[in-house]
Length: 440
Image 1 (cartoon, rainbow, N blue to C red):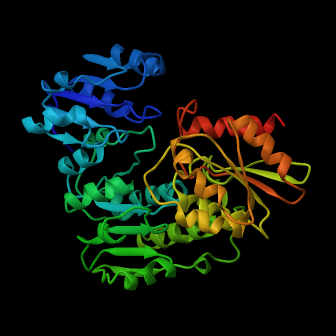
Image 2 (image 1 turned 60 degrees about the vertical axis):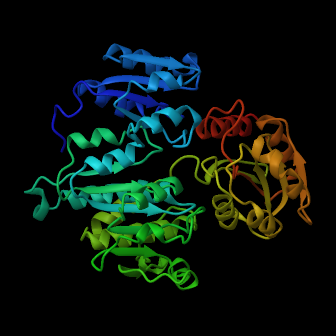
Image 3 (image 1 turned 120 degrees about the horizontal axis):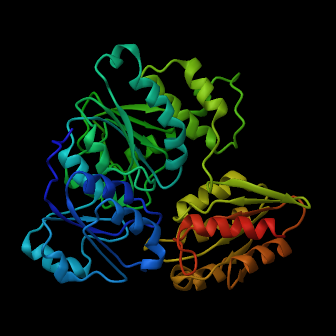
């Protein structure tokens, strides 16, 4: 818990409010804590209007939209970056030379927070689903009689949510439970800080890493835990990695067979991983059962939209990496009955594995425009035994998918790239897909 006057009078430059305003809650916290906050964002003022109106009403010192003037940042005591902006951005060059601290919300949080019990979720796919089902279980763990007397808190740090991260400093205290989504960029940042989660949940292997996918575990100790499937844990040998923590191999068979789960098969492993964590924190099975049986997968994650004339449509807009799209295809495909809609902005990762496995699961691919699509178009068009069609936009992509699908097929919108163009965000493009499907 930081001192209430910690931020008073501190000149803070916040770069970016996030694609969906993920930084607004932190901005609110800093303003109310007495900081002199200035917001800079490459997005237009029109797109940020609602957020800016609110922040100005509570004391935002200054804001600049459509550009980030490098000279303005030189007056700041600290610069806080949204994940849209890398540390090596050119507008930060003089700030770095001056020695001004540059932080992401998570790195700033870990530098200032007291010792916490950190539960981290890692992997190219499945993180959001695990967070959504595990969070209420850990909430129960913090409310147990043996810890309630100490006033233990539980909170989630998720860079893709609007709940903020820095703002949790006002209540965080020694021994609290923190559930955090660990993105590829955050893996590098936490490794630099010598921070490893006490309980590391591998939903899958991370898409990007430097030397090993298990680098995030380097600072674990013997009384920490690695929770993952057999496949992930067996990979530790491939990478010649010997974790210090206890490895808990997790199978879907850990889920009692009499539980009434109304979920798709691919989510059973996510449930199993969450259940393994719940056991570690001694949450009673009956409480876990109630959570699991009423749980609904988050929107935009292999979300069923509609069935029309024997053809099912699924929205997986949250998949921005090839491994996520591969997981979605594996979950839905039966005898190559998929029409895959994908494409968007470049992510800087390899697409060779995705392109190699597409013929196993899909008979048709519809490509949406974007810098990533353009970069990899020739590779997609060379996929054997698969029809590849380019579409100018979402509505046409859905129409083409319907035209090329037959009874029993499934149309899967799983981009494998970031949002681009008129799609301001992943959420927006998912909504465009849903509207197009419902308009058929």
